[in-house]
Amino acid sequence: MNLFDVYPLNPVAIDRARGSFVWDDEGTRYLDLYGGHAVISIGHTHPHYVDRIQRQLNKLGFYSNSVIIPLQEELAQLLGEVSGKTAYQLFLCNSGAEANENAIKLASFHTRRRKVLAFRSGFHGRTSLAVAATDNPAIVAPVNETDAISFLPFNDVAALEVWFGLHGDSCAAVITEGIQGVGGIREASAEFLTAIRKGCNQHGAVFIADSVQCGYGRSGSFFSHDQAGVEADIYTMAKGMGNGFPIGGIIVAPHIRPKHGMLGTTFGGNPLACAAAIAVLEVIRDENLLQNAATVGNLIREQLSAFAQLKNVRGKGLMIGFDTPEHPELRRQLLQEHHIFTGEAKGNVVRLLPALNIKPTEVSMLTGALTSIFEKVPKLS
Ligand SMILES: Cc1ncc(COP(=O)(O)O)c(C=O)c1O
Image (tube, rainbow, N blue to C red):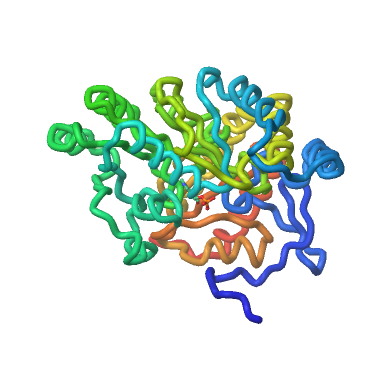
């Protein structure tokens, strides 16, 4: 049997990993500034994480949601403590798309409405509602097409206010990332997030903060939306939540009341996934990783800004982007010549999404590589 060809692949097979480094099957070491697509939050194979998962697997790997799973309650307590959202309610699932799917569905149940507002260049996943709310026709199959979702330009407060005036009373939810990831590291302005909050309050709609990529401490705050001083009604999470163990979730404000039948899952919240997620939060808390993300993120942006060849260095914490219009080969050179993994977005955007415990000494490997690459490039006038 062959594999279904889903992605263009880098010609590298990763065999083992530790902290911010991975090794291929020939023993070559790479610096991982991509974090497996923003997934590695506490570093690869963190000893506390490995130990907790191993101990749990020896005890109980799975049982269904038909019984009490105390680890879910432990996870909810710890997530409340670390995120500061103590009054919210936790529902667990397995991925980011599933988290957004459940968030939109719950908003529709809660409001008994079917209109959803999403934004240009946003990305919310590949399942039916999540992909319908994603502004990329190339990934929307005919069966996913729906008139329930409307799109507006990102960060356009005037357009938002006009839309609320026309459609607010039939709006179930507004969904937005705090920092667009796939869209190229574009921050939502505080003014824009505040206007969404205000419109949702006025019209009884649900504000969904897609925090799958920009959440879980990556921005230097637990949720990037926090930096605008704006509270959402539902936050969606995945990626860094399990540091590679598949787990996603939504946290739901207390005014949205649950009813049996609204949501459900077989695998969501299984004991093994909970053990992984608890270990991640313990490390984020005990190793002060929100602070590290903010500090090292500032350091990286400062150092990148010194390279005239890198344009529009931007982002928050360890969610960093820059444009390389004159150097379309930069990512390939970093990988093949300097063994550094980075991420990308359309339009020659390089995305850096490293582990939240990356060290300044590791960052200097990137700046050293950039210096060496640009020294070889003939100066462009
Ligand atoms: C902002 C955002 N939302 C949702 C998703 C979908 O997550 P998953 O691939 O876990 O379904 C992604 C994935 O990249 C994302 O970046």
